[in-house]
Length: 75
Image (cartoon, rainbow, N blue to C red; front, side, top):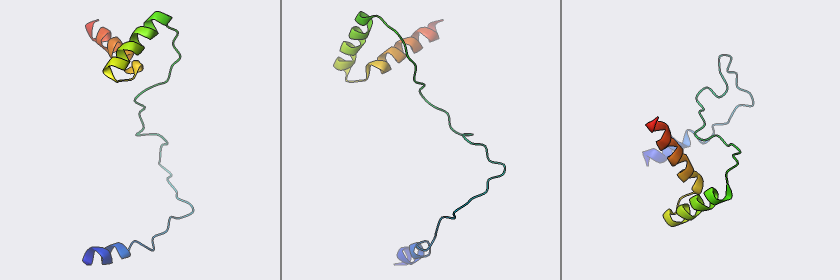
């Protein structure tokens, strides 16, 4: 019962119309994981990765990314 009473304290909470963050930096903690790019590859390469991706049930872009990452580690 006490949990319900404690939650009732917050039921009347309202968001203010305006907040002031004078020292705030937009996007300070945001770091995108993936960056969309346009890349032109030969048709047979795409078909190969799409077929392999279908067999492994993963997106073909994930396979291409893994191959590129592996090659970078070997350099």
